[in-house]
Length: 114
Length: 116
Image (cartoon, rainbow over all chains, first blue to last red; front, side, top):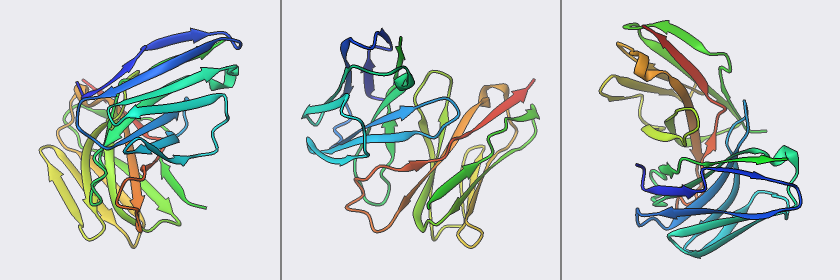
């Protein structure tokens, strides 16, 4: 148990569906992140939130919409996705400590877009 | 452009041997480097961090070296066990950092398979 919980663990959706991924951290961290992990590729940073404010958006298509209502919760709203969006979506939190910035990951949501 | 390279081919070794994984980087001046372990269908788990002014770091059977001249980090697992089988990722963070809240940049990882 890493202290970061993601739901659902698996999600299958059609290209016209709307769904949301949820992440919750119990570590008291101020920073939260969404990553995408596709087979054989490095983790791709999508969004960064610090103290509920979005500080990074790495050119992510608008069909992915993040929401961070407080420092413990992070959502990723999905709509009109494409098959190439199928991947493992990982949430992470970090203390933001300048000397370390160790990231704590959830188990991920395995997303399949049909 | 900045690049992090890890051997994409799986590393197969016999139980009891030392596993050595490599992380090379270009166009980076990392302040520190981290290693993570990732099991199938799970998120990465932090293992070790080494700073640019440290040559070596150890934790139990794990050892990490960091050579900023060669732009390379080596990750060693001594007396390897089948339970060490996983994918190992290196991650870099550079200075200047806006209070360290920026995310890390990860390599694609190397899969280690330890045969009993």
